Image 1: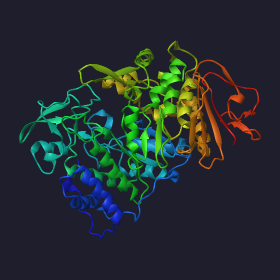
Image 2: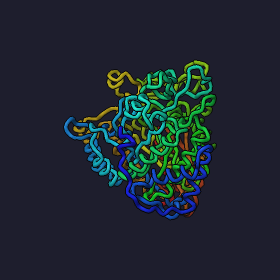
Image 3: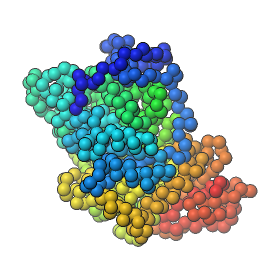
Length: 594
């Protein structure tokens, strides 16, 4: 890993900093480090983030609805989700994205592409390098020129095999205070645990044995942000990534970054202050930088990371995947409707990041208090019948609880609680179409776009449940699969691209457009969207059952005198007309603008 001593000296250039920027930084630092010289720390922040010759804006950006539009969407992928054994995976990825998704999807989230030792990229050894097995910075920058690039800032932990941790063990400055330590005698009973392994790991150091804090695994050692130099180093890394084309920064596992023995060590006030500080820096950047927080926690806790429009621009809508899966497996929108009606609209300049699958499993913590225990148990059992796995976490009393369901989303929806059936593709497309239409910005995992099935072989080879949804496609085989119009891969991919393209042209699908939940019974999940300028309305209605359903056209508030059309099928819908029919899992976007 690149060390601080190896970081090039920034050019000596006068930096013009507005008083508002300087004071904003200082106030956040006073809350994070009340016993430190906030003015000296402010200078350090400015030098860390803008010390490379870049300069801040005179005035910070004000969050508003002009930040994005209905054409914003992301694809989530690993750098090596597509391989051929000959070319650099990042080069193949760029080829696939350019050939198939240019003009369809605007953004791409490339999961950690740095050198690493475990957790498929999330145990990083060097934040300033690209894994040579994937390619180089030139490949990352090339993709960043064609798509809005999202990159991970893994700021809670790094690899136990990194040079930083080796320097810590040898007692070398500044790394000897970079990592959080505790004692086995400390009361850690209130610590919220996302995993089941022992929290502390004993290591030998030049100063004797120490117990380092490991939230996620013993190869992932947690940083100590009470040391300001840790924060400064991550601000330098943040700027380094921006200079290489990153425009959306994913703050991985950020809920855990501040620890205090005797507390839950999650969502602590200092954590929120650090994110607010990063938001100030993003808003004053010349580049259009967006922050997204990754906090896989119960819904109400997740919402706190919007702050008062002063923390994350986007938050992951973690409750959406388990609720959609439950609805489609059980043929009822009961819990989905209840959740949606209670969800506050995001303020202007903030947005929900609506995804249904990712490189991780389908998280169950965000469904706590939203789904009953029986509902979760039934869903888990069905997923296991469809070839999925279940990962567990340890509670403070030592008991175990399901943490996430590990499964390809396409296979998770191959049937219902009654068993497998012939509606796999229609059911799966329903799940994706719901995410496309909801308030926020949709994101699609590459294996959802490609309708990839469970990778049982990957699980056996790696010994990790999450490998089931991290298949690596051979590029030739992928191209053959997409060329075969009868394959599940081509059918899903083509339908997805068509619907995403339709979506981008609809002002009512602006991330901050108005949304109201429709009351159409438990077999349908429907909501109304209206564009910011009120010129377009869309009734997005989704059949979550394997039955053919009908509703009276009068049950929708279709304004008379206007032409209404289903944007997905092209069928006209007459206001005040007869019934509207829904085939099993059919979705309709009924709009007054075709």
